[in-house]
Amino acid sequence: MSKVHYLNSHLHKFREKSKITIDVENIGDLAHYNVLDKEDKKTTNIFTGCFKNKENYKELLKKLPKDIERIGLYYLITVYWIAYTCHYHNDKFDKAMEDCLESIDEYVVLLNSPRFCKKVYYYLNPISEIK
Image 1 (cartoon, rainbow, N blue to C red):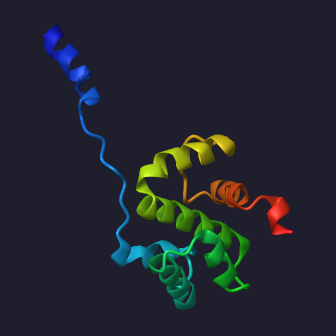
Image 2: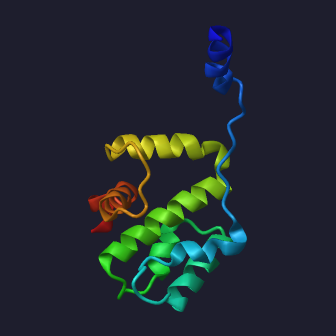
């Protein structure tokens, strides 16, 4: 009995880790940042267009409407950066996320947390660059 338990406890070392993937066909679903309101079609189209044209998050930031609330902006940029890095730079995704989480002093990705999204936003856009 103890040998079976011993072998089972170490099986996870030999399992292949699956890569995280993004479904490009439904990328617009990530752009819905305000759960209480209806989806903003203009924002979704900009988000989807930038993603399919392989534009980075800074290009998306320039194209987004200026009337988006701050929390929504933080969410959109965070989700876009994560999805873009995961889809177009999958080999560097783990390292990029590790560096980001370490820099913002977080351990888990929490996309539904405004505090987390704000930290990632300012990690990607340091205050010196924003001014």
